Length: 424
Image (cartoon, rainbow, N blue to C red):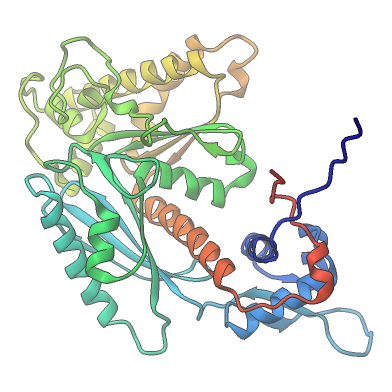
């Protein structure tokens, strides 16, 4: 029997979408790039690049400017393509205990404005939280200057477990129950909504800001009123089958130990979060239910006291470092030691936590890995959560633009099959 195997051709609209997305992604990474460079970096033909970019310019998604040249060559100057900031806005929400940070980004990823608002979360149900967020967001959008484009994507970074479809927060210690952010806010505002764990959005921001360090394997630990973790392996975020997973803060540090805000006992968070450090520094019963919302300025005073003298405040930070260090040691027993990004606790975190952390991690590492252990500190979590949420929102917006682009195909474009379209 002679079997003939014929290649299965992808549909032209699939090709257009994939090629358009490839070009948008390349421009986002480069910032400013010529058509010749785009053809080289994407593997698409010059004709395809010209056709698609012309359509994107017509749709005001891309714009161009002349490239300065030091040569004396005459003729038409070479033009560079860049994203058009007028294409759309992405609104981000970084939601933590009773606080929401709202940041609006233009299509190039630059901040338009940012503002914080108090949103009561601890005793509120999903309807109440969505009502509050929609009220604030709609008010902010109504105040936008007329020259700015509309908000076309909303992206949340939340302290809690998120489903793999990135629409529902399944559980969080900062709310009374699960919250369907996407359906709830989309119904109220009529704008697409995506949601992610705030540690994951932090990891996305770090990978974008420092691709050389965070382009492969690394872990990031969020240290605020809770303790979170994101694990990135081979440049891809690790997630569970049903949820965002990696609930590092709720790994057991001491069986039946200190009371955690999640309601259980002995979690890493019950020793290493701001409320845990406060509780230990003040000599409160570690088994008491942590109800206090720690004021940022009060915590900063406590941290400064720990820096200045050896007392209960410094001991509380040492206990936190031990819980974090042992937890990371357990993580690195499952995966090879990787760069660690520690996010939060202001500038005091590095001085108060790092010596103890390094000692514990050094003891955990194999001799040939000890020299490779890299720890980087980022004192303010808020901007990274917002930046990562914006990057996720911009990715989704680019997908939508690629799917709805008016760029038409010239006859030779059909031969440019994007490498990431797999034949079935």
